[in-house]
Length: 304
Ligand SMILES: Nc1ncnc2c1ncn2[C@@H]1O[C@H](COP(=O)(O)OP(=O)(O)OP(=O)(O)O)[C@@H](O)[C@H]1O
Ligand SMILES: O=P(O)(O)OC[C@H]1O[C@H](OP(=O)(O)OP(=O)(O)O)[C@H](O)[C@@H]1O
Image (cartoon, rainbow, N blue to C red; front, side, top):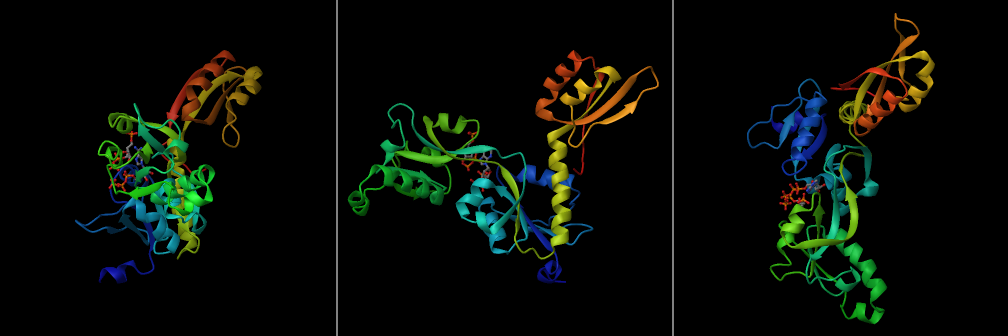
């Protein structure tokens, strides 16, 4: 059977074929038991046991393809959705909790402008041309007169596909618009940020008219389950019933904590899901209200 016939009737899910989001997207697919074998050099792979096909695409193209309905679902950065201008054309199913960074205006640290207003009329280099143009159009409008705008004195935005940070050193730009996570790339290039255009993270999106809505729901809840399991841990502890009320205020659980009586005296065992980020603080607080035998368990998968 040829590839096109194999794909007919399948739900398509796009993931970045390389780059920052690639590995974590693949690990989400694995956690959701979307198992596939990818043939060498082929950017399409059939999932075993489900009529789903995984499509490997550049992260920048995924938003547009999902928005236009060429692909049913996709994982990409929120920045890519904004840049592609498809916000209104896709359904935002879930934030995935990784790929967190900021799109920032950066200028030379030593002798660069101090504010974005000082960049007006200058040259900006970026891979996010649409977002940078939109951002600077607003500032140009505030700073320049209509006459000056008509004379073309506005900020000039030039597109480059990568290595944006070297543009100032090469004399191509007065400032750049690029993603910043740790800030290492920016600092290594002698730049610093003077403004944030947006904050972004990886997100699961869907087309508004998918080929198989039931399957979209099934795949979404599998992926959401994996995301939740990475975000939460299960906290288990014993406490005297007299202190239970205070303790459950600290660990209310997602819906409610599970409480089971112990054989011994007036003690109970409490189980509750807790955000990973909050677990150390919650354990401290539980100890102060009299909890004992506090245990933390990782969750390998869940449905919430
Ligand atoms: N430093 C970073 N930290 C966290 N997330 C990032 C970072 N850089 C990029 N991202 C996220 O990953 C997405 C893809 O970026 P990445 O740089 O991997 O692009 P790419 O499509 O692989 O292109 P290329 O590798 O050719 O530059 C971005 O849109 C953003 O959402
Ligand atoms: O603040 P940091 O932690 O240093 O991360 C920021 C860098 O990460 C991204 O590029 P990436 O390394 O993915 O490569 P690219 O330049 O080829 O896009 C981004 O474009 C920055 O250059």
